Image 1 (tube, one colour):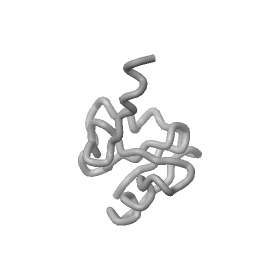
Image 2 (image 1 turned 135 degrees about the horizontal axis):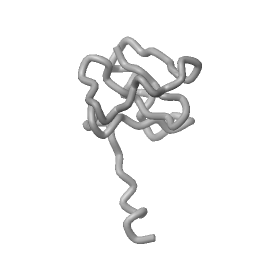
Image 3 (image 1 turned 90 degrees about the vertical axis):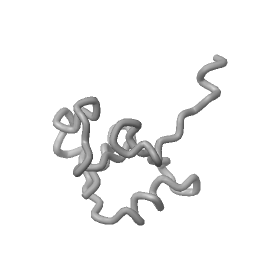
Amino acid sequence: MYIVDLRNNIIHDAMNSKYECHIKDIPKDKIKKIYTYQSVVRMCASEHRPCFMGCQYCLSELYNYDMTKIFR
């Protein structure tokens, strides 16, 4: 099962969560549950709006770092 944080559009893997994910700090009204990996991949696709991203700690294969932030 996957947990979507609707505040900042980050998807967490509930079975592989780390301490750094802070899933317990997400308000209950800002959580959405997703049950399949295919749905998560579709939500992380660049065409999907709003843009979702995998968590850098528990779902790193779907995490995209914006390299342009380095040069600002």
